[in-house]
Amino acid sequence: MFDKFIESVSKFGKLENSDINYLRDHSKIVTYKKGETIVPSRKIVRNICFLLDGCIRLFYNVNGKNKTAFFYDEGDFILDCNKLAAQKNYEAIEDTVVVIIDKLALNKLLNTSTTFEMIILKVKELDLYNYQQLAANFITLSPEERFMKLLETNKPLFQKVPQQYIATYLGISAETLSRIKKRVFKKQREILYC
Image (cartoon, rainbow, N blue to C red; front, top):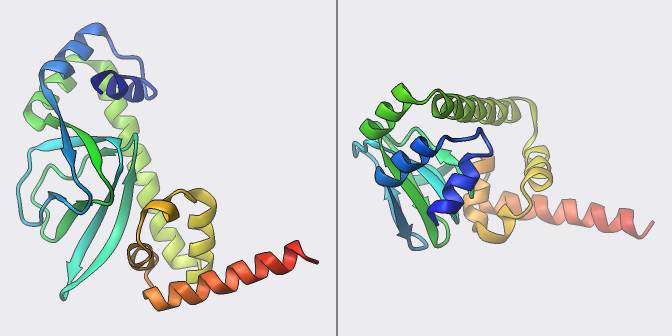
């Protein structure tokens, strides 16, 4: 599993052998079962995570209701779980395997490895872009358009994530999502048979 981690991280930049050995010594691989909490709210965590396999959702508990903010998939870093997060929760959507790297050890690596520093910078830029896209979608698109965009960009998500999580991610109720899906798929059938 560690080799899969190194292979995935190397897509962002080629690691030196010393970086790989350091990561091997200062990271651990942890498995979470479906539905298991990875980072509970109000807990200080001094780690970053890399998702090797599975799916994780970030959600907030707002007035007793869970609202999904983001999904993490295989190959994603979770960088913001390393500080006190007032209402943030991370949950395994399916059986999930993550590599956990201690924040202090990571900082030492960042101070000695320009390659790994560039990798983390690229990951942060990608995170920022994804969050900006998410915000832009909420501002500029209707719920149906947000559904269509998610379907176009991440169709496999619909196979592994319960409908209620997708609904809260889109900012709508499960019932509204059901109506949107029915409307969209009806339009697609009409186009196919015209």
